Every structure is written in structure tokens, then in C-alpha cells.
Amino acid sequence: MTDLPPISMPPVSFRLLSKLTRNIPPIPHASGLSNRIVKPLFCSLHHNERYRVEVWDGIEMIVDPADCVGGNLAFIPQLYDVWERAAINKFLPHGGIFIDIGANIGAYSLWAAKRVGPNGRVLAYEAEPKNFSVLMENIVINGFERIIQAQRIGVSDTNESLTLQLNDASNSGGHSFIPEVYGGLGMSIAVACEPLAKL
Image (cartoon, rainbow, N blue to C red; front, side, top):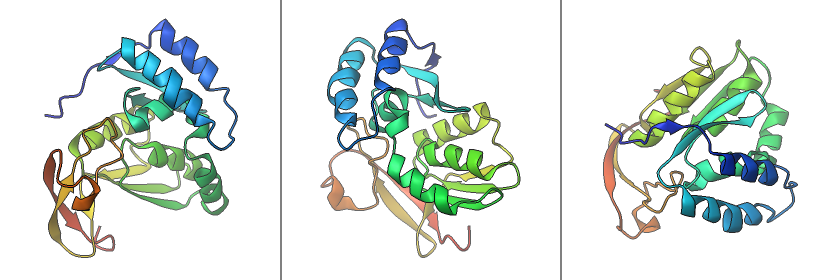
């Protein structure tokens, strides 16, 4: 249904390169070393592969290194939205509730599930089928089925069907309900949407 490649063991080249990139410090534009040099070099040799890797302490994810989101989580998880996560961390308590609209493959949902713990709850909404499939895989491999409630649906201010423009340039986080984002290029799918309060 979703046409996802199988999960492979990360090759030695990935393990060596990611060991290097995971030591890049959290300073502005530091991710460029990974995104402009390491990731393109690795992906020129490895195509259409997904790996199960540890991203943060105790959180594993299935990622595609060639994807924008997956590549960042594979090679530089310590830099992935580091300032945003630090800000959220100040306000998200153990036992709290976290809502992730446009959950993608689950980075924020998984991170928040670890933070809120077994007495908390994460509500994850992802409309794009492939992303949702990977999100569900990532929930299961981390054992967060009781914490994360995921739904394949869009969020809007009313019950409606919207057209989701799909980014076909290896950026699973680049899909948009705004047609101008890609000027009508690429594929699109119809997505059922509901108001957050109803969900």
C-alpha cells in the first residue's frame, strides 16, 4: 500500500559516518557539514534504504537517510530542532499531554512520549500515508502504543476534504495544504480533515 523499502542493517559506512556527525556541536549552521557533505556522499552509494537507528537516548527510529527529515535524524539527531525541543521541554511535564499535528514519521511524538512517560499522552495526527506508516512502525518499535494515539487525518477548522500537495524532492516534511508551496508541481492526494477539538 505504501511502497516502503524494507528495513536494512545500517552498513559500516553509515555507522562510521554517523559516529562522526553525531559529534557536531549545536551551533548555528553546523548541520551544513552533514547535510551538504556527509549525507550526499553516503546517499550516492546507498539508495532506497531504511535503517533502524537510535536517535536519542532510548528512542529508536526507522529512517531513510536520503530524506530531509530522515537524514537529519540519522546523521545529526543531536541537532534536530534542538532549540525547539529545549523550549518545549520547559513546559511539557511528566504525565502531560502533547499534541503533534503533522507528526511526520514521529520524531516529536516519540520524543514527547519519552518526556511525558506512561502516565502522559501524545496525540499524533499525520495525513500522508507513507509518513503515517513509518510513524506507526516507530511507535511500535519503541513500545509507545499506550502513550501515543496516532490517527491518519488532517487537522482543519472544519470537517472537510483538502488537497495535500506532496513534496517529491526527498522531503517527507515538505507536504502542504497550500498549493502555492509547489506551484501545483508533483503529486497530490485528497485528505479528510477534522477540527482538533473534535479529534
